[in-house]
Length: 229
Image (cartoon, rainbow, N blue to C red; front, side):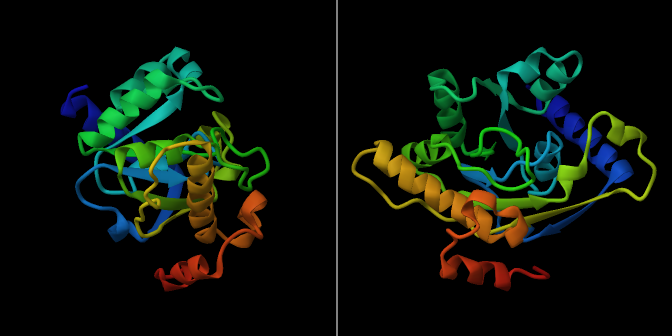
């Protein structure tokens, strides 16, 4: 993937968003400008990767479900913008190795720990893959919360009348998972809980779902500190 195709692909995303959505971004300054980092977000719609990708102000790659690469036209497009396939809900070791390599090269990797879009508009329990990657690669995690995209229905969204869809992206401060002597299932579970509650803390309570009553009080404070949150 050459920089030309990558940036051209994201320019198309920006144009589409300008036409069909109004996106408010809070906390963009929290994304490290360089170095490997995992951008972890809740997931409401297939539009989320594009919206978040143009909101974090640096080159980003992301895992996409393997089936997406077989879709006509769109499958080729996701390759252009730097996505790579992952077999969901199973131990896809090849995808994990690829992700670890990209992080060690200093890239930003976008991940959705829930593994799939929410069917209720609220958070579901997270899967351990994001935590395992963060522990193995030793990189920080930037929690991101997105709201508003749950109402988008594709492809009818391209034909909906104005006003445009209103989406909000809230970007929290980067953090590291506690160091462990061994990356085992217990460490992955604890790391996943930390990641998901940091994301949930940035969301309105109505979006928190499974994590509604699991957010520690100290995480709530960060949300209050973010401008306009």
